[in-house]
Length: 286
Image (cartoon, rainbow, N blue to C red; front, side):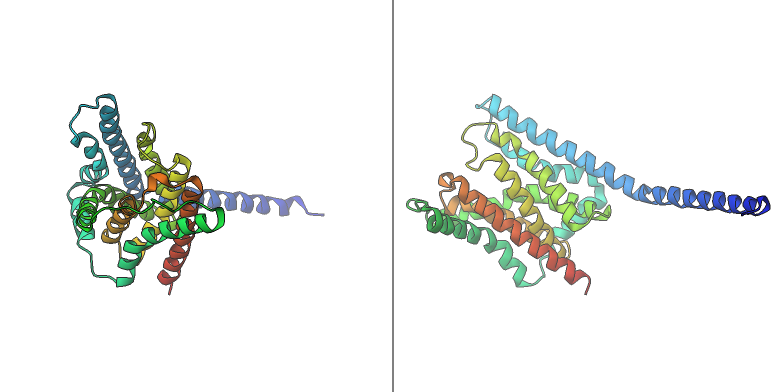
């Protein structure tokens, strides 16, 4: 039997141990919400609010008043870049310029950024045709090479307005918060997909059902993050990948894609994103 004299030191030791554990937990909580992390969270929230408000205002205004100048909806596409430049301040704008000028990296990443989506469109259509008998006639664009080249140049300009914000500003801050590349990708992909919601509220604005688009945006976000990590945070592959994704509408009649074709595209993109992100993580640890 334990004597009373032996219990007193034991109780004191237990209380002391609990106090030390509470002290360590409080210190961990303070470190988790350090001034740097609080600043990152505030920047991300401010960026998201501005990007959504500016873009949605311009798009809903264009829907409500069709006679507005064509530049009104176009301005919404540059809302993420505007938000990043405004919230990031001088240091943030300088970092964006450096990311945009970072072009020296392996040609492998240029190839993935340029060829991934056009290839996946073609593969998805071929599978849909071979397995389900989808009619491939009249799916190829008859646009001239000059028009295709001009369209691609225009898309490089337009999509940069998004990527400066999403991948140039938001992604590195999510990673700096301590989120894993996978979690950062999923969070950013869902927010990015939600940002496009007004396009799906107007009839005829998009041929892909919104749930499948949300899945596509999340899968593409994995690919963007992998390219970001493998190119030392460059913006170049992000702009190229976004431009070639939208360029599919110039190569193919994507308005005639059925739900199966879009689902196949989503699955191919998700698989590629997971594989590329896994390899990027392995490369970072070796």
